[in-house]
Image (cartoon, rainbow, N blue to C red; front, side):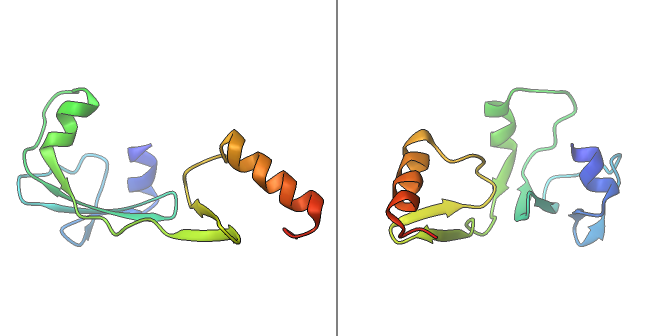
Length: 103
């Protein structure tokens, strides 16, 4: 996925377009557009080998803007890029559509 994002021009390191082989150093700022959401990460410690997510999360600071929340219907909010609605949210939407309020 990261390779495709880099090749598509959706990743920048310190303001410059990044290639999949771009090395990052401590202090570098990475801007990425993932699922129509801008992510801004500051590298604290570069990693040479693959590690688990909890370890990787300690190696950067996420300064991304909050996700865009839109209101589907009165009282029901959705966050872009969060995937399918939950079973509870889907049932609420179905009830609203059946009552004629959610068109």
